[in-house]
Length: 422
Image 1 (cartoon, helix red, strand yellow):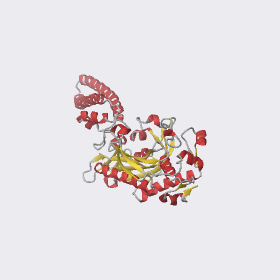
Image 2 (cartoon, helix red, strand yellow):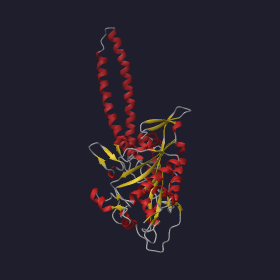
Image 3 (cartoon, helix red, strand yellow):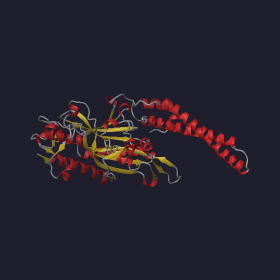
């Protein structure tokens, strides 16, 4: 969430900036409630001070065997007023918190203004779009031909959007996960984490999934737990309600998890095959760092993701998301998309974001400066490194051969165990 003090002192600026992200937020109500809260706190402090003074007077009068009935009656009235203030204060704080949880992050100054994905800016394209001298098969045809994924049996077990990976399909999934984790740990310096797949409400609220994305999450209602939509949630919440040492920053964590999302998109070509599914595998990158380092760390994640896609020799592009296409928690986001030759479209495989102190304020993650002892909020960053379904689509479609076989990228071969699927 945003700093309430910053909102108070920069109300017009904040209204303008969050208006660019298309998230409704009643900041005027926040200002009114905040003013009432500060007034109540001031009046309550005056009453508590009066109570302390009069309590001493009553003690002195009783010690002198005098009559303190008038002062005692006053204290009863004061105590009742303080109780009423406390009740109202709790009501106000709940209302303020509800508003603040729905106020989006402010976009970074480098983010272009835009209404929708059409206004995103391509900042880099890498690799040659392959040209084929034979009819190109879609990934759906390739997975059926090589018996890589069984969509029908997955639907029988759990419903549409729950694919069953089989044989070389399961094998290449495992190989990709191993490749991603190996690079993240050994080349980019991340620590591998294997987190829980279920999180509580505080964790989901800390990273911004609640209340914004509640409708997209699978909930275990009896236990009030949620299946994770991304391992960003547990990897960030590892440090919820903690004060970290400056010497421990930056923290680089990476983790593989299945991810679960109820929202699988619209009907038609966009959801054909494994373009959009309810359960998918993803390797995540999360960084916790000092505020002054976060954009340098952001650039490093972008470089890491690009490097991995290049290692797979996948044609891809980077998109700087406009204000109207950004999520609630992000200040800046760069998406990576790989080329699908059969669908003749770009498919998102990674989203790299800087959330600055937004998630840290929600999750109460802070650090202590070594030189001054001052406690500040950290900055949090995350990125997919990478999401598997569409990365797999890119590998299958871009590496298909005239005889129907699929070449395995060289970097993946040692994890997959062979150089082609046939």
